[in-house]
Image 1 (cartoon, rainbow, N blue to C red):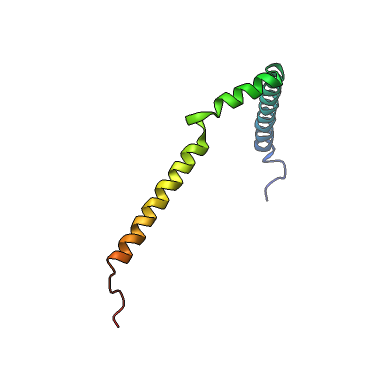
Image 2 (cartoon, one colour):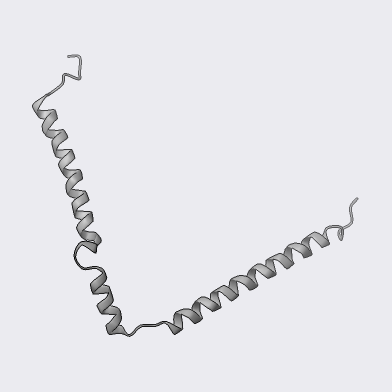
Length: 92
């Protein structure tokens, strides 16, 4: 029969690694919160930068509409072609 205390060194080693991991995660979280708190732009400047970022061709809605239009055109061509050139698919 094995002793209950035979595996305590392994458990202690894993607990030390877990403590190091949690310390590292807490440190990273603290650094990111501190960096975010220091770099808050003014609301007006943030609004202007967002308006400039999503204006014109850079606006992803334009590209999304272009993509949807192309896909609809392809499906429309397939439907048109199928109605223009029907194929007998069923044996009767």
